[in-house]
Amino acid sequence: MQVIMIARLHAIYQQSRTIFMSLIIASLAVTIACGVIVARETSHMTEHLVPGVCQCIREAEKDPRLLNAGIWILTTVWEVFAFCLSVWIAAKHFRELQRPLTGWNIGNRFTMLIKTHVFYFAA
Image 1: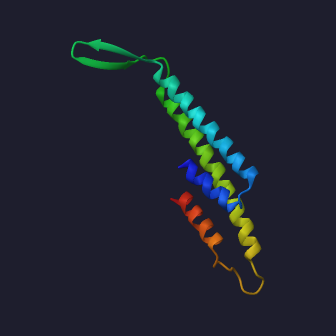
Image 2 (image 1 turned 135 degrees about the vertical axis):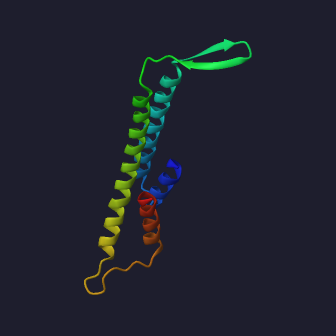
Image 3 (image 1 turned 60 degrees about the horizontal axis):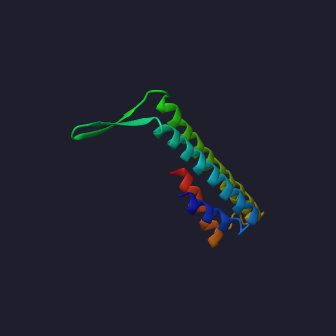
């Protein structure tokens, strides 16, 4: 899902190289950090062979809720970053479209892209 979000934000920001690199770096940081958390969690698993049964028993060294919370927090940070970028460009675009006497002009494709992007975060 991050790839689609990166592509959409890159398009909304008119193929800005700075935004693209920021999104790639943030996405890689979150993905790598989540991978490290999962690797640390699964490294504490040991396999015990019982005749006819293979069981993985977790050694209770760390609280798995803390590790799951770490993944959740990192994913939330990514979503908030993408949300802030979406709100920023939407506010900028609508401010440019505002006309003193006629109100808002919401007829172009860019506006539709922003609307669908905002609906993603509302769901």
